[in-house]
Length: 523
Image (cartoon, rainbow, N blue to C red):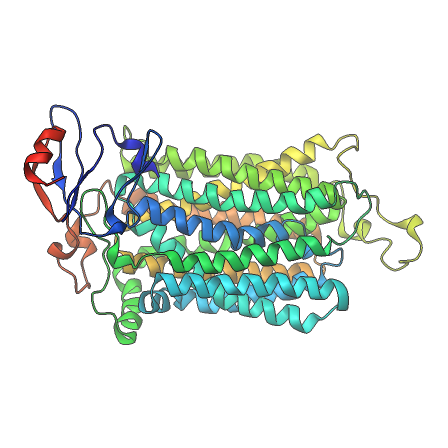
């Protein structure tokens, strides 16, 4: 998508054997010829040229829409608190099972994804989201805890593969100077799914001022959308077919086997031990979701206000991804310096936003919120939750929006840090697997802590402390390891591919005008 907007010259020329890219200007780059076939042919919509189907931006957008439909709907449902149910017990148990299996599978998911392929990993992953949503529809009618726990455990397996495949695409397909924008575009489209998904319960519960479980229609809508996402994943091309605009390819293993991938997983620890410094950031990255969704949104707001907060939360993620993604690609600042600036910015907003969260959390306790639980038939002693018409609502609303902005900033920076360390697709699949596995281990622990009824302030403090502390541990990576450029030779270490396999190919003589191209290609 971003690449399409960068074109400044005449349109691509189409020949019977290749497609050539031309530019205007005094010093035009060489013409890059592409293989035959529809996957390498540009499309035009009005004045805008859409990149060829097997290009990195086209594939990234496709993956983003898979996540729009699957994890996006999952986030919309989770953001309601309790999986849309008033009773959060099923969501706590299901998500504990989810993140426990995710933590194990995610750690090895890079190996499975490299062997099975991106398309299979994403499609299989999408099916788990559909079954997960169905379990909450079932629970709202029959309180079937067994189905909810099974669906959570299954989704942990599926999501491990989906997110590892997604992370590998997002970090390895773009060139070094566009990784921030690619992460930004993915995160914006993905969270647009959560925004639209959040509008479903908001529209269906807009007149519900009491606290209740969301309607069956909400769950059914999510089931249909997640099933569509699993099917859409099958439209991806194989990673080997992807070609960048300079003709270069993604670094992979030419002949992956289970043995080479398992060995490659452990090689990552020995060749890139500095990745360990990012592990605390991985661990903290989903820890705070439980607190924000269950202990703020569910605890303090009625159904329709939770739905509104949820929509604003995910919309703020879009804003955060846009701001940080594009800032991380500012070409006038060296990449090593951008890494340091990003770290300082994250530390400052961690102190500011979570400092505001501390002021809000001092207002209530878990005991106050659940004071009326022992007498369900007597509503006189129930905790009165906030509605959007309640005086003083605006402050908490903006706090929740800042929580969403912060999450996008954190996730975007972590992905960019990993992508700045290497361009090797095989290695980045392992990095993404480590990220999602360790992230899920943290989430599993936090869901369990919330399920056991730990004080809200203790859960808040653990979130703030982990975020700030993990930044301190990660600082050496920003100071020492992130360089302005990673050479191709460094990226090909321990790979069976050569420079010729992945460097720019199909480059012919320079062409400065459309007429020059016509001399070398038959239109």
